[in-house]
Amino acid sequence: MTATSQTWPDARGRFGPYGGRYVPETLMAPLEELERAYEAARADAEFMALLDAELKNFAGRPTPLQFASRLTEHLGGARIYLKREDLLHTGAHKINNCLGQGLLAVRMGKKRIIAETGAGQHGVATATVAARLGLECVVYMGTEDMERQRLNVSRMRMLGAEVVGVNAGSRTLKDAINEAMRDWVTNVRTTHYLLGSVLGAHPYPRMVRDFHACIGREARAQILAAEKRLPDTLVACVGGGSNAIGLFYDFLGDASVKMVGVEAGGRGTGLGEHAARLAFQAGFSGARPGVLQGTYSCVLQTPDGQIAATHSVSAGLDYPAVGPEHAWLAEQGRAEYTAASDEAAIDAARTLARIEGIIPALESAHALAEIILRAPKMRREEIIIMNLSGRGDKDMEILSKYL
Image 1 (tube, rainbow, N blue to C red):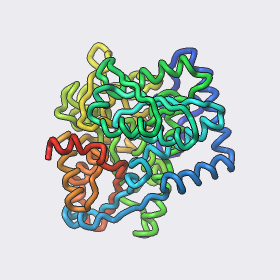
Image 2 (cartoon, rainbow, N blue to C red):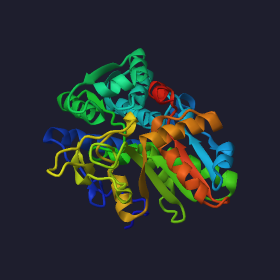
Image 3 (cartoon, one colour):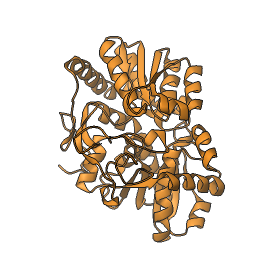
């Protein structure tokens, strides 16, 4: 098998050497239950029809593929298209996965949902779906992230979710995941853990990918309708990696389509200054294979194997590990991974706002920063699709400090 065969993960939940299930014994049974339930649901035409209806009528799919004409003219070079996930209900791609897992929780008879969140968009989407489906909802969030994403904390509480602040560790996404997993161990019979990215123990990386694969399926059909051919390059930001794999997945078998994931370059290349796990060629230090929060992947670590501190202006990219499928795509050379600095992301957000009238999430702005570098060097007939994974309302307090 190859990285482009679209058959990963294997039966053990592994993408090459990455992935798997590294959890306490108390979580093995619920993970196996979840895997069985998901396999049954995805084979159930009635379940899939219900999910499609919710994605269309509640979330707002399909999202447009917009030709960014003024940005293209401004940069010169390649033609740039934006996959407008920011136009979905709740303002980001996160609603795709939350609807899928929420409906699966109902199917499994779970009455309570827990989740973790960094930038808050996954928490808002989870709280939204819980309200839609009549489920109890608890969201864990690092207190550092709660401070810089206060608007999303208010939105979650408005939707009826309990937001639990986490003061441990770096007080960011990693620590929120730890607390959510402790809750799940304690309440596993009544509770579904709605994990927000292509992270964690099998079946989460595959399941979350599958719920976001609609992004790439739509983009493929839309670009063929608009340009009568496939794009040359796909670009998306990568924190855990759900929006990126959602765009990439339907194109994995197309060798002519280049894929670029953009990580958080933060304020420097030294350990603790960034959150770049796969951007080895760009000189970012500290990542090597290891286990974190249920999966084997590339993890930022100190020389003695401790999980390293990270930094990003974007709360949604500030995580020391990356989804195992991305680690495998990087190892196989199927996708390229680079990083954009805090400053470059902020400049990119300003550029898109003033040229196209779109304020992107700071996560998405990292992908745009790479396009600003790359597009002018490409030929005018070449085509780039960027996943505009979220809107920037949540980041206005941060952006206003720089602007």
